[in-house]
Amino acid sequence: MDNVVANENVIELKGLTKKFGKHNESTAVNALNLEVRKGEVFGFVGPNGAGKTTTMKMMIGLLEPTSGSGKVAGFDIVREVINIREATGVLPEPAGFYDHLTARQNLRFYAKLYDIEPEVREKRIVDLLNLVGLEKAIDQKIGGFSTGMRKRFGLAQALINEPSILFLDEPTSGIDPLGAQMMRDLIKDLNQNKGVTVFLSSHSMEEVEEICDRIAIVARGKLLAVGSVEELRAIVKEKEGVNYLLEVQDIPLSATIDAIRSIDGVQITNTQDSTLHIHTNNMPRGEIAKSVKNAGGTISMFEEEEMNLQKLFLKIIEGVQV
Image: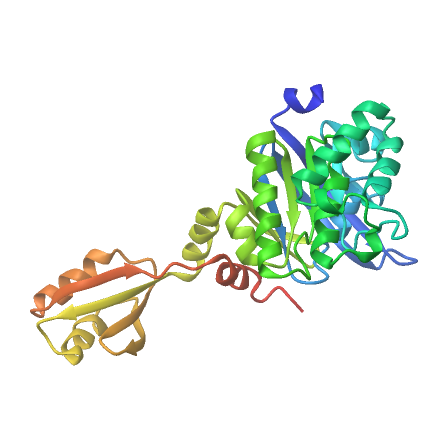
């Protein structure tokens, strides 16, 4: 744990590479450089086959890299795997439990792997099942749990050793919207109130946008972009330009269109009722506003069309995916 405090980055990957096949012909993760800061919720997203699960497996010592290096909680991902297991909690996809055992018995089994004292262990089991809303199912067999209950139980299991870093692979896949929101709230609570650093892989862009501080986008094993949603927007704007929504009064729509058409680098992409959708190559809004004013129009709405993470993701991976 002292390693974590001493180092602002709790995950550092340098040139991390994993190849498969007899002659290493298939590259799953390609020279990945990544840093995750202490105390953040970090999203790791990409299409199927992007290398997300392979990267996670290397970080927790389940797979050895072909080349490159990495540290998790200050420990080397090849030489100090036992230390990493002690400092981290993992919710894999799919998670495997002993279905014939109860929730309490399952957690007791995992607690024994960490040599947790019996009194501490029994109290922690109750506390954790309380935390994830499964206190009433403490003595029920896991085999009878719904998908949502299994996911929440998986989170309790991942927390049995009080980890400083939590790896979550698709934590809400296959569960209903209410269960998914409960899971997201739990993750936020663990991060904000217990200071747990969370490394989260998910297909739900809405989920990642809601709970992650920064996001890495990967495709075909390569890191394409990393940053907050705002920073990713800036990357896409730089490359793609900006879209605006414009409404003008006092002059006919055709006059507004004529006034804007003449500006270099501005293109009208759509007209919806009285709203113009405009695309510009990062042009200042002032030019457009001036042209409208000169034509005798009054602007009643002029706002930037903000891309959500789903749209940003599609723009960033454009042309990369096979």
